[in-house]
Image (tube, rainbow, N blue to C red; front, side, top):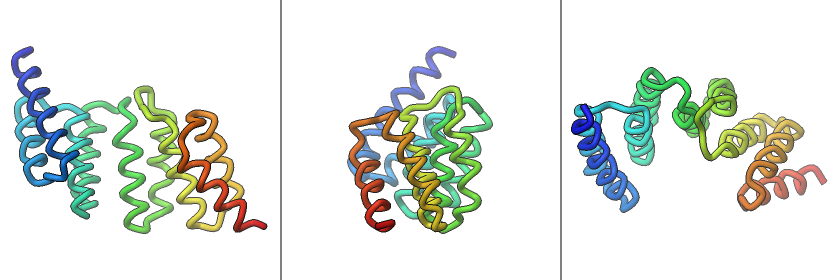
Length: 159
């Protein structure tokens, strides 16, 4: 069992390197092989991310749902589903997924779902709610510049 786990982890690492280099099809192929050997929530989440980068949000969501089945405490796929639904313009559907990411036991970086919720609320014209989410994100990650930028953009719109 440990050998399978180690082999899957090695494939995952190779896939991640290809993924970051923009070699999405090759990365997906290795993620799939890793999942066949020893499926993990992380593998399915990252494979979903690769599909999302190709614009295939529906497959990305399906893969994140598989990740959640394997590890319901892993917060990343909840946030990712929310962000894919945002990309599809399905804002109301994104909200519960992002809220689940916020409360997930195992999730880093914790500020991302707050920023994504702020994006949803901004798109829905809910400026006060968007600002509250950004304030929370900034408390969690004070050096995360995109949160500060979005906050200033919203404040400028309100002036």
